[in-house]
Length: 338
Length: 279
Picture (cartoon, each protein chain N blue to C red):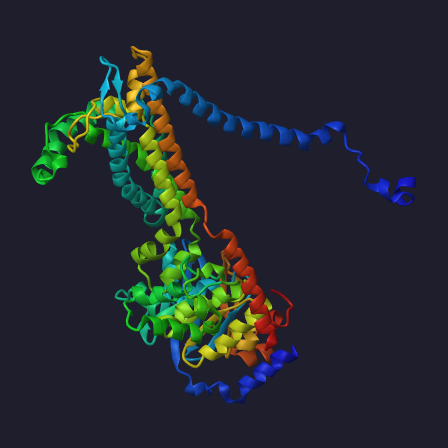
């Protein structure tokens, strides 16, 4: 009775229960801890990697990066051959996978009949869910023999004038690893790209078609440019996946040190070498060298990830907003004058 | 209401050609459109005349947008859509077996409810249609001409390379009109072109329509009756009809000179709608 009119400030006095009032600070605390944990994990992992690779770093320094040797008997280690193997398999895989993935995404969003879209989309996503060890197994059992008996002889006879397609055919090697990685990367890039295409407003498609664009002209002139930054980011994401894949690659690449142009030959990657040798490492130096490889891998992966994030972020956000505001002001003035 | 009267009086003073002098560009005869089994519009008969502005008005869901989209075969983009009856454009059956929808849209342009500039520069937005149609000669001049015709040139001439997305809504819509006229169509269809714009931008679009009328045949769908009264020479009123089987469909209730529709409609439903008694 007194509160209603007599004392104005008491009208908004806190009357909620203590528990109710706890909600906001609790939410803040929980979310902060969760976010802090993520950051801590990243810092902690980086720290441990640097610590673990200290021994190898003292011994080999940055020369580790330019040395091809990996000699467990004489305790000489270097990463160059593995960096090469990682780069060539991941780059080739993404070069094959990116156009395929964009084509799949286009089919799923633009061309396929509606009922097919959902089904096929789900199947593509399921491809991404296959555990990599199973893909590796498939690589050994099915893909390997196919590569050795059909693909490599065919490439050798048609493109054998190039140094990439020469040499002993083999069920394992760079080509097989690349194809396994491609299969792993395609669904990732395709599903992200599909989402991107679906976010392109239908009005843009209509706008192009209403100008007399064919479907292909609409895709090339409007859809792809509108989705381009996102597609690049998706490709970077897929590339990161290919760089970091250990198990499937380990199973099909042949685990051999050395740099050569032939895609038929054996090779090895950073991730596969770490996974393959860590448990059987015979010296502290070898263990430390493997951790050194892991550090390199982490740096590459983080760099790819940062690159991807920069690609998605619009570069000139603030200036553009200001420009819009300015335009509006100018336009209103100009209009009201007449 | 006074303003509307003035506009109509202007129309009466000789701007609208006499009935016999009008040249029909579109002739719809018994046009019905179905989405799957659902009939959206039923048995529409209408002649749309050259170099006049024809407004299509009516309550929500009466098939206004469906009808305007049949005129350049945008309905084809809905897989379940089907048209029966006959729709002729300059004597050619628009839905005839040898007619290519892409060719139709090159000659009958369209501007949409929501401004939809491409995420490209202002210049490239206008040049887009020209490029795909292979009209690459004098590209710069054509772009300028289209921007001038859309009354946008003075505002954007110094920043043609800037993103079109930085323009205001009204400017974006005029850019879309420029984009449509750049490819030199014969007809421009406008599907509620001002419904997402503020009054100032709306009046700019309406002024522009009066300018464009000299060279183009314009068809505008609008839910704004004042707008129809201000801009249109002819007005078609679409209404909702419930057929015996319970299907709700759009029908053309009345089509006449705008003045007649707004001052002396012959159908009770039209009168009810334009006087604001329903809809």
